[in-house]
Amino acid sequence: MAGDWLAARRTEVAADRILDAAGELFAAQPAATVGMHEIASAAGCSRATLYRYFENREALYTAYVHREAYRLYVEMTDQITSIADPRERLIEGMLASLRNVRESPALASWFATTQRPIGAEMAEESEVIKALTEAFVISLGPDDAALVAHRARWLVRVMTSLMLFPGHDETDERAMIEEFVVPTVLPSRHAAR
Image (cartoon, rainbow, N blue to C red):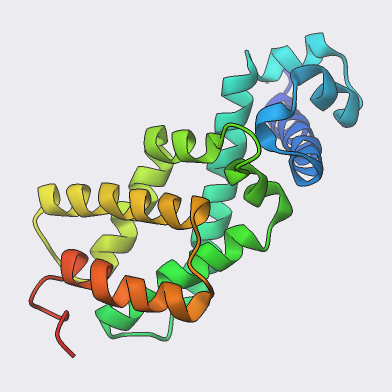
């Protein structure tokens, strides 16, 4: 067997270590203000090493967001696993997702209004967030693929809006989701209750 069979695992561990260090910095200050030099220093590596794993700040940001999106999706689906009704699943899934992001200082910093809120840009551009949101919409009931994609894109925009401009409290956000999101994502099937 030729080559270093542990190379892939070491690369994964090093990248995770860098992303963990970035997460600690994101928790301390708005994500948009965190630079590559700071991340390299926090990760205990040189900038050259950092750039070996992430070609630029955008690539690092994308990797971080994608890793966290997967983690949050698993958390959210675990939190709503016992909810069968699509209407309640939609409402509770959205509220759980908002709560999970807000409870994470590192993720909440992506929506800091004191700096450019880069979380909104990432949410719109991320293929991972798109795929995870589409999977959530599909879990609510079968639908046409084009409608799933359209509704998922709209759902990401609503979630981003609520992150940037939250309701008064969770009850207020629940009411907005019931009135404006449920009828759009689940038209006629489950909207009226």
